[in-house]
Length: 97
Image 1 (spheres, helix red, strand yellow):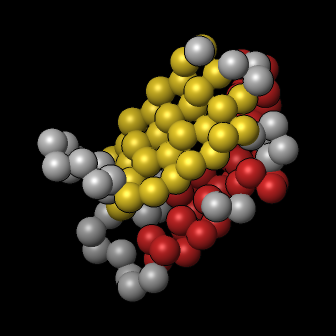
Image 2 (image 1 turned 60 degrees about the horizontal axis):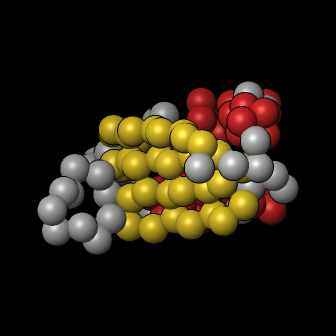
């Protein structure tokens, strides 16, 4: 299995409701991408590192399924049109487990 982890920080100057709309759209991903397993997304509640505001983690049965998701036209469109304009910073890690 592959665990895909994304930590991110929204831009501070977003219009009201923008971050919430993007988070709501992320919550639709498991239904849109059936290969996703164990989806979890939420705000960062750490008191040790607040450099990121949110994170999500998802599992895929194989690296091929992760790559199919990442390279899908719908994912690429989301990243280009919805994600990049609102994200100030991110860190992505994918690893086998």
